[in-house]
Amino acid sequence: MNPIAWSGGEWSVMANVFYGRDESFYGDEGAIAAPATALGESALTLVRASGRSCLDLLAGCFSRPRALREAAGNSVVYGWIQDEGKRVDEVLVSVYRAPKSYTGEDGADICCHGGLAAVRAVLQSLYKHGFRPALRGEFTFRAFLNGKIDLTRAEAVMEIVAAKSDTGRGRAVMRLSGVLEREIRQINSLLLDALTETELLLDYSELDGVAAEDEALPGRASVEEALARLNRLQHSYRAEKLYRDGALAVLAGKPNAGKSSLFNLLLREERSITSEIPGTTRDWIDGWISLEGIPIRLADTAGLREPGDALEKLGVERSFDLLDEADLVLLVFDGATDGADALSVAEDFILKRKDVPVLPVWNKADLAALPENAAGLFCAVSAKTGAGLSILYERIAKALEKTAGALMPEAGRAAPGSERQKTLIDDAAAAAAAALAAHDEGLPSDLVAPSLREAVNSLGEITGEVSNADILEAMFSRFCVGK
Image 1 (tube, rainbow, N blue to C red):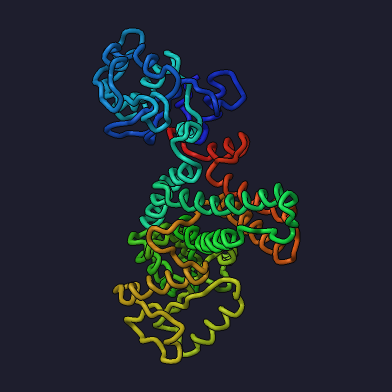
Image 2: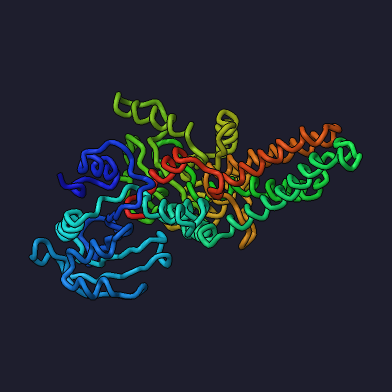
């Protein structure tokens, strides 16, 4: 069975079937190989290999085995991948020697020709010579096990791969460079110092004739500083989530208000069909844009009115369903036909959908000016001429940031990048606050210390100093193949 005949999403399952095994391979040191670039037609493809005896096994299917075995780390060797003496593909092999490699093991990046057939042939030759298919995230998993990166940097690898905007990518690069890791370790150091002093007090208070409750938290100042820094990390996550995952903005309004034209303008491509016939859009259609660094999934919906037939009725129902999921509704009005009552209509719509922020948009401003009584609430644009578009961009970004309570951390300042990290930061902050509260209540050291220990352990889970196999496997299995 050929393990690369399937998509990356099925890679792990097919790898196990290929070897007739059901269990995971995470944690072994065997030689692994997988494509590190997307499978498809391309000029070149990179196949990554790593693990025990990696270079010796690779030499077994390489046209210049001695040159490969004797190659220094961080060097490139030219040759051919072979299969039973027949040339498979002409390649360049970048050689890495432990510990100076991504995984901390001996490894190689094989640059071969692109295309499914070429990559398949190269991988099949590697598998015949002792390699096995890598599981999702297994290269990064080994980098973590071998101390090359902590878990915050490991997660940042996939954040970069999945980034939807340049701002999101830049924030992930900061975490990959170790900004969050350093902040977590510094906070943990403060809590460890306080915990050490508290436990020493427990050990020696009786010998010194001092009751433990007289100074139950000698490192209180350190705990207070740690809690303040944890609170900053907590507050920064909403911004990180917005810039990482993006938001859903839905265009809604009556038929012929110009929603589809505005959708195409914002998307900068003709995705929605536009016409003068009401009800042209029967179902919603979406696409991604980026405004002020925020990834936005923009959705165009059917006109909100009493439907004329069953198909249009279904489209209207789906539009209302999508409105319930929206992070922001762009309520589009037709400037050519909507009159002075537009303000009251918009206010009524906002009142009815108070759980979803609404930005009223006065479209066709080239045909009719925005009524004076609506100037403070509406944003005037023309989907035909593009007038007012820059202001609309700004209003959308500000509305989303306000909704998320998002204030981007200062340049260079750490912030959590995943829900896992945020949850553990919450746990650590709650435990640190509990230690301070216990001290304020006059409780003895033996009741303060457990909360400090809990905070330390939670922060240790963020970096991976405290971890277990099940959690690690669940996390890395969400990575892509070849990373």
